[in-house]
Amino acid sequence: MDSLHSQPTPQFGKAEYVGEPGTDRCSACGQPVIHEYYRVNGVMVCPACTASAQTSLPKDTHGSFVRAVLFGSGGALFGLILYSAFGIITGLMIGYLSLAVGYLIGKAMMMGSKGIGGRRYQIVAVLLTYAAVSMSAIPIANRDAVEARGATAGAEAETCATAAPVTCR
Ligand SMILES: [Zn+2]
Image (cartoon, rainbow, N blue to C red):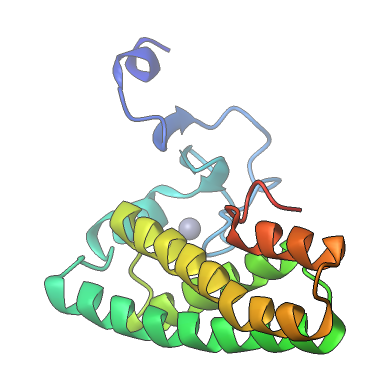
């Protein structure tokens, strides 16, 4: 137990396996966990898989980050069009839709970086999502100005679209 407390990294926690051998399986390879296991982000992983995961983690490079930003920008543009079109056609501004835009951008960035993620990728994804959702207010506001001049619903929708995605539901 002392070795557990002395280790400062909770993500890769090593532990002696005390359960019945064969009842728990490695969540990566499916082999039964026998002597010892690692807790990787809360799931049980055998030592062999932990070792291979630590050595084969994809390296974050400048090229992959640039590709992720490019793909993410494309995703943001696509999300902007979708978000605007949905708002204009239905007249609804749904906060959840900004989450879908964020998901789209995240997926596009993962495609661009070939699966590499990290804090700076998340920050870019949030910024792109915010930009896409914010810019969609422009075509939607134009529609509101034409079709719903003076209507409070239009003003509310515009406020909703320019607000941060998390605060607007
Ligand atoms: Zn395994």
